[in-house]
Image (spheres, rainbow, N blue to C red):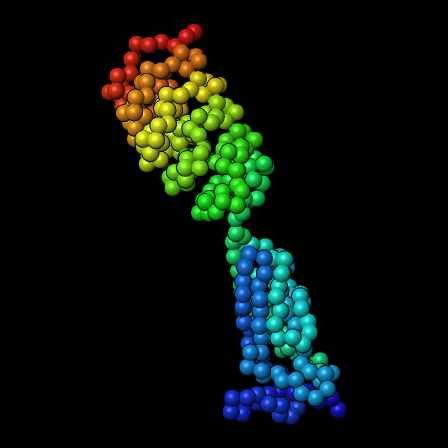
Length: 298
C-alpha cells in the first residue's frame, strides 16, 4: 500500500502523522531584489524536515507564471530552500509559487507571490549608447535619473551629440532640469554649441518653456538673439512660431531680444505670431514696440 504524509500541529512544530495529504505551503519569502534578479526563500520554519533516506525527502519547485498564457512553468526543482531567479527584465513584475512534492508524488501549491524588479542603475554607457542611437527620449531618461554627476565622474562625455546634433545641455534646457543645466555648465558645457539646424541651448529652452531655466541662462550670459542656420530664427521667433508663450517672450524681450528681427524671408516675430494665431503674444509684441508696418520680402 502507498503511504502519503500530512502534518499536524504539535506545539510549534509540524510532524508526520500517518496517511494524509500535504498541507498547502506558505508562499516563497522574497529576499534580495535588484534590476535583474529576485531571491526567494521557503520553509523558513523547517516544516519539511529532511528525515530518513534522501529518496523520502520533500522536493521543492519554484514555478513562474507566463504573462501571456498565465500558465506556470518550473524554473527550479530540488531540495534547497532558497533560489535566485536571474536574467530578469528591470522594472518588471513577476509571479511565483512554491510547489512541495512528497516522495510518493503527492504535491501541494502555495499562494502566488508577486515581485517587481528594480529600475536598472544608470551608467555612463547608458548615456553614450542613447546618444549614439539618436534616442533623445533615452537621453532625457538618463538626465532625469538624478545621477548625472555620477555619470560624468565615471567618464560620461557631456558634449556627446545625438544624430541631430543635440547635446546634454540642450536636452536638459528643453526638459527644464535647472540643477542639471547648472552642473553641465560647471563641467564646461558651452552656450555656443549648435545642433545640425544651428539651434543653441536657448532655442531649445524656449521650446521647453521653463521660465526659471531661461532666466538662469540669461543671467549666466547665454545670448538671446542668436539665429539658427536654417530659417535664421532667434529664440523669440521660435516662441512666435512654436509655443506662443508670453511669459517666455517677456523674459527674452526684457533681456534685449530684438522685437523686429527678421528671418531669412523677412518675417518678424509679430508676423509669425499672427500667422500662428498667438493673439496674446501679438498684443505683447505690439506693446513692446513691434512695427506693424514692416513687410516681408516677396
